[in-house]
Image 1 (cartoon, helix red, strand yellow):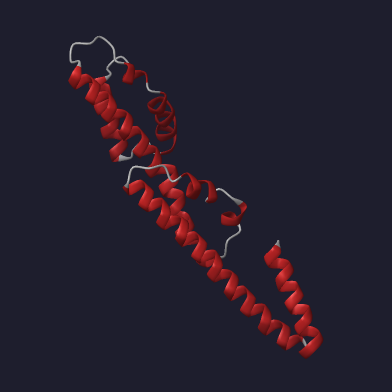
Image 2 (cartoon, one colour):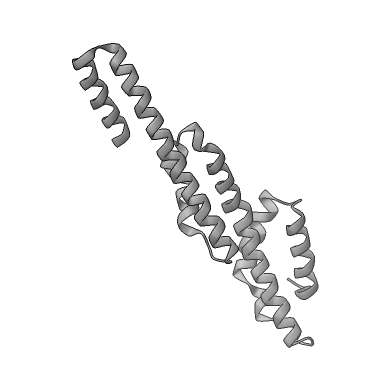
Length: 157
């Protein structure tokens, strides 16, 4: 909205000062600057998300941004970074959470190999991510591996 108002003001100013050609020229410059800003913002959030995932930390801010109107309305030049961020948030992050749940259950089973049940096998995180991953990525090799590991550690779950 602010971008549109600024562009309109500059175009009107140029139209008053130098005609339609000047207005078109300024309009193109505004679009180029806006494209660069959108791309920079998308690249920044993507880098932050990749860094967070590498540290096994939730990239909450970046994943919230990718769902925002700013991301939805970003310039075409920013779309590759936005799409990569969307994949990271919708596939990589749920896989990361599911992996954490499996590792916790495996660690608990290693400590208590004869226990009939484990608290970790009642993981809300696992249950939530299972729904998401089964729905959106049922053939993802890592997901298939995680399900097999879970079934081995938590056979009744």
